[in-house]
Image (cartoon, rainbow, N blue to C red; front, side):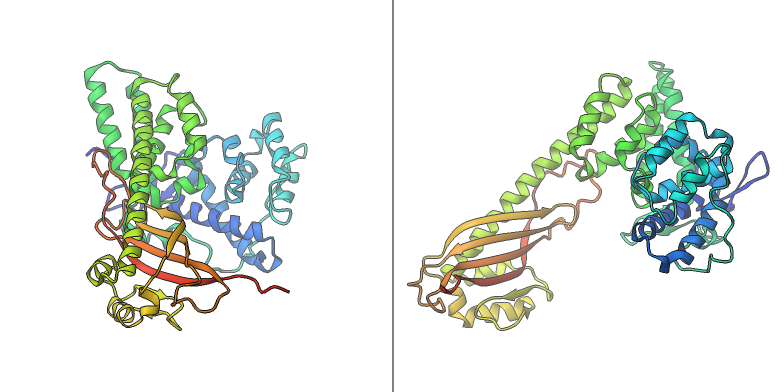
Amino acid sequence: MTIRWMSDDTEGEFQPDGLFTRKGSYASAMVNAYYFDQLATANNPDFDADVAAIIEIERELIPTLDALGIIGFFSIPEWLDTTHQGRHLIALLYLDQHRDLIDHEIRGHLGVLRDRVSPRYLLPAIDALCETPPQPAFPQDTETAAPTQLVHRPEALLPDGVQGRIDHSGVFYRKGTTIATYENVRRYDELRHKLPDETAAADLRHTVNDQQFITTMMSVGMYFSLFPPIDWFADAAKEGRMMPALLLLTQYPWQIDKAIVARLEELKSVVSQPTERLIDDVLDALRRYVELEKKSIAVVQSVFRRYLAALEHQRDAVIASIWADDDDVTLVGPGAHSWIRGKERILEFLGITPSHTQVYGRTLETAEVALNLPQGTARVMARLDVPNSNPNVIGEANTGLVVQAGFRRLSIPSCVPVLKGDGETTAGEWHLVSWNEGLCIAPTPL
């Protein structure tokens, strides 16, 4: 493993000009940008103090983001080409500190931006920067900027002596992830130009493997929230920048949409062979994921139909095998006056409530499956026809039953992330976790 991590015994690095770039700087900038986007969209004066506090800390972080190459990894026009106002804020703060960079092209981008941003917080800054000469866009506002829980400083996000933090999903995010990624991007571009040299080819494989190890950390570090994967593919000449996003999509294929597929198909004809192989890996991961979705939907539909048949013929053993062994499973139906929770209580209810289990002439009319494969959950929304001659039907006005059934994949609870070559193509075992059944009542004639 050759990842250039930040040393365990350091809290950051000194740059040649003496600037100390602290660990967690980009992470805190991304979190602050997220909250700014939410508050700017709300455009509520009640949030002015929070917004002012975020602006002040982001202003302090700009030199660090510049020194680490974070501003530059994506160009200022790329920072501005979005609806994410947190990204806008960082770019505008950078321009406010480097007004000599505001040329005709940048003014054009700022002009386009005027209709996209909060008139309360960002529009005055854009107007100031577009003046000739550019004027200060964000005057110091330390009086308004009150302490707030929404502001995240690097030292609070990653305190001294801490090597990283565990995300809510259980992923460990290590300090130095940004530095390591940018180093891998630089080396990828350097090495691909040396091919077909065997040493360069081996080093290139090591670099890609190192970045693949970091991918899950990047997935929880908001990198791809601030800049979605397709933004990493904007410049066909920056193949090194494409590499982390391609590895992400290979492991998280459900994030691939039609726009990404179209862009990758365009890039295949112009990129180098190593990058083309990474693109093929992404497209293959998508193909396998779509196949797995289809298999999973078919399995869920089959289990649902088997459960209906078991209800009709009162096959208690089959019913019991389909319900998940969980105290949190739930059922509600015409014969139940409230939610019944827990498998044991549900099976007891089904055994003593023939109005629910003795189904005469019940016909499945429609059944749609809403699948969330990454979470291993599915919901079946079905309509069943029940003839009025059914002695278990209440009244003559019903037109059938509507069922919402929840399923969970218990054999493989989650497929996050999909690791290259893990060969996971089975749909797994799906079990029932919720059943909500109600009568369809025809409207009463006037």
